[in-house]
Image 1 (cartoon, rainbow, N blue to C red):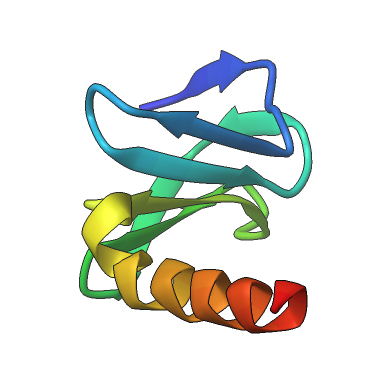
Image 2 (image 1 turned 180 degrees about the horizontal axis):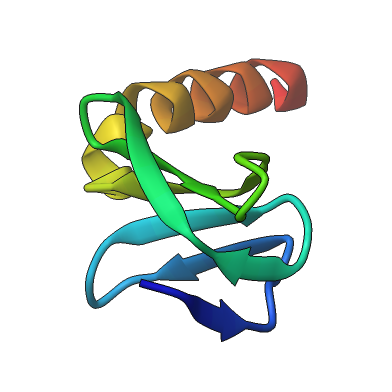
Length: 76
């Protein structure tokens, strides 16, 4: 299934809780699961054109907390 769309470098859709990292523009030819909840979009040559992270808020919750704690310690 080919679909072509203008890729943004990073986009977060809060409603669906999906974080998208665009690597390059192109038509998506297929996708592969690279980790639980993470899909890589491939072009017709099999090159990665983007990565989607599903349930992004829960996946990055511990990372966000760590960044917040580090930032707070720098201010104190």
